Length: 156
Image (cartoon, rainbow, N blue to C red; front, side, top):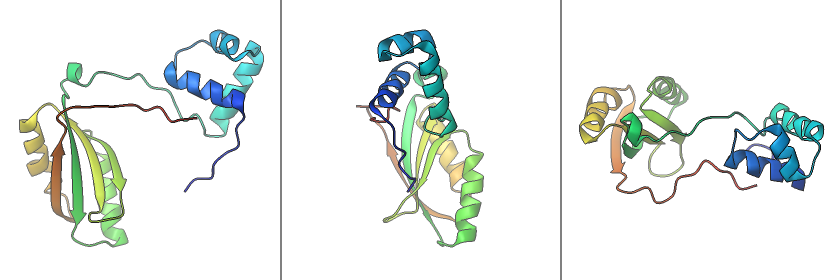
């Protein structure tokens, strides 16, 4: 587990505001935090340098980009050895339909978060991509019927 870095209340306020609006100007961020623009800029710079802020991104609507079906997939490998883990990880990194891949403890080895157009596209992904990957013994699919909550916001 990564070491938790010590940050103060002002840093937390900055992080919360940037998570709500990553395009906020430094001037407005400084005003809302009660800081001078120079002090605010230095704090944000320090948060980036320490690796607390790791990047900025635009959030897009997957439905409008033809990626309306969200699927979670449990993957069980045929062996749990370092070479099989490494091969699986290398292959999965190249698949753009896979948004997230997590090695987990429990009854299976990996949990994938996959976005595709529809069930036909998922069937093709499963048969042509995932099932053909070396080391994959078994998969279980969970198609999402409704996204009740979706956030990238980390509580600060």
